[in-house]
Image 1 (cartoon, rainbow, N blue to C red):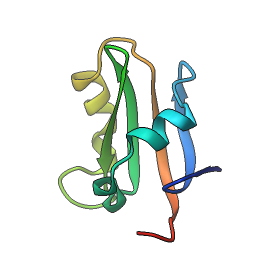
Image 2: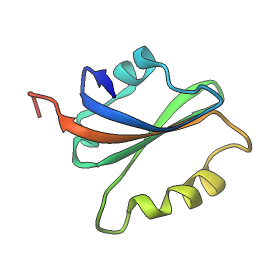
Image 3: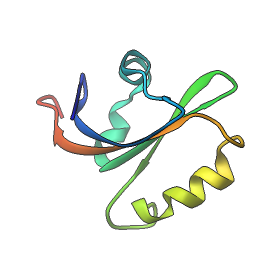
Length: 89
């Protein structure tokens, strides 16, 4: 379990030790509150965050496709699963 400024998460995958708590907290935007899963990847030295739901078009089942199609080859990335929302939203 990981406690962040934006809720509690389970670190599902941490490829190449990508997860950095401070980077996540600084890059996170409230728009991501609606998603159960968040993928963070480093592209050109910057953290990108993308949300995925349990239902709908952007389901967590397409995460492998997103990583292979939208992330640089062999980049560092992680997958978080929201356990509990923060008190603010």
